[in-house]
Length: 404
Image (cartoon, rainbow, N blue to C red; front, side, top):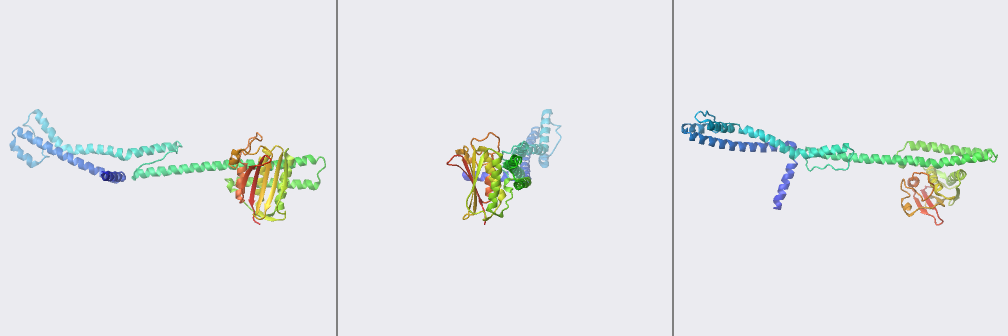
């Protein structure tokens, strides 16, 4: 029994997978066989019936003519009365025209069966799929178990749906990247502008009092010009990229003293721009040691870390830098005296659009600073780690792999 069911299932699958051309030929052959069989039976029955009617009227002399003419023979029925004459005419007409009647009716039935079996379900499925796609609903699957032309069309619609899903996902990724990039750009402008404001406040405070020498004033203006040029280059770079990952990494050989000097300048300006006191300590190798690093990326990370620390610090921030000659690694640590990270924030702080610290100012921010720092550290072959200090507050350590 199982063998028979298996054979029937294979036969059904074979019939279901026939192309429309082969299926139509098969349906027409079946129709022709049915029409031929029914016509033959009808002709024979009508023929025999007519012979019995002729013999009932004792028309034996004409019976041999009927046999000679065959079942399609026609004759005048003037010898029969009205009712029998109508019966003979009806039998004779049915005998002659039954093939055409069966063929016409069979074609209608065959077309209806073919439509129901081979066209109705896939056409309904395709119409529903197109309507859902038009309504921007892609959460479905186009599935039709046949290898005929409409089955191939359903497969094509399913492939198109998958392409649309992938395109939509890619579009959302691009939107998220653009959103992240815009947030990063807005976030990264905060600290450089604060540095410039610090230099401006410094000059505005001490120039009227005559406490700044001309040389110091020129140096300060040169620093401000350098920061403005860096902002201009940064804006040009951000305009030409589509995601943070595309920020260029351009290492160059430089002395540690140059990096320390730039950190000093930022700390100096921020100390004059706000009420938070920032202390900077440097350790490790001498300033004359040369490393190959992208100091612009290092400064971007520092400014982001300081921006976050200033937002949440109570009154003091500690900045420390160190260079491990053995590992060829530059370390940058920023600690504040704020509330620090909660357990959940320690897990999520490096994710984009997550609010980094507990407490802090009530101003709106993007929650993207540490995520940007992590991406920059990765680009420089390093890492970013967050923790809470044993003295209280948050500690963030950035590492940068440098080649000597």
